[in-house]
Length: 262
Image 1 (cartoon, rainbow, N blue to C red):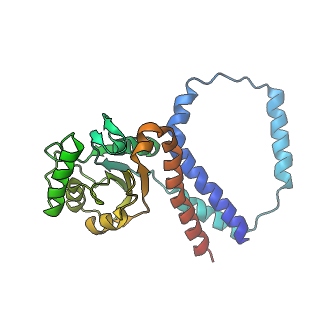
Image 2: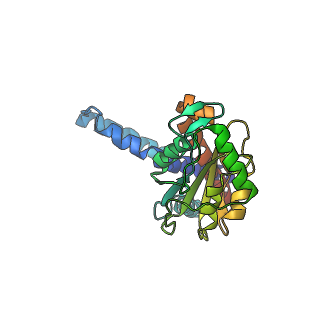
Image 3: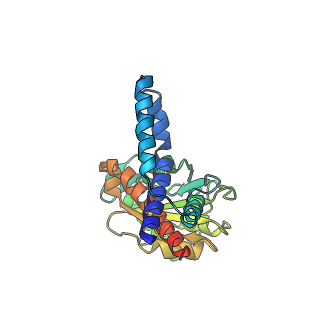
């Protein structure tokens, strides 16, 4: 019984996340799809086959039906979550990718926003960082040493959002100081944060812990870490990687539901 429920949960979970991530693509493709004519005989044949198949299904007891209904309700919820994708990104000279006109972190943020239908928000200081990498590094070193919290050029009201994706490059094994300004100036009570970063060899750089410490009362989920070179030269890999990252959470939720039925 447990294995049957687990299979049902995983199928529902993957279906729910797949539909959310591909809804826009499906709507776009629908406009160009050729019309397909189906005869009444074909419809009748399909209906007959379906009826015959349905008659062969094993009966499901009332207890299992109730459990399946509870799983569906928990996975789908009543309303679509509202998503904010907040990111810090920098153009100019970057290690591993040379001089770029579109920031590494922005490329990831844009794909996340596409899949989640989220709202993009750029975290940026009132001043610009130098385009030259070495000069930028000097400014970043001074800010980190002083634990500076630069004033932001713009703010955003996070109240309406259920999930907030936070994206940042790795600077000096840390986040740029404006990201701390953003995190520490907001009330994240009841919010889910999904962190992601871009780097050229530093990996996650303990961003999960740093974000959890700065964004008080937020629930911080496992992060996604992407090399800058991937975003610039192999961005075709991003949609699948991001979808897989988001689906891992669905698997975890499914297991929690299974455990709660014991």
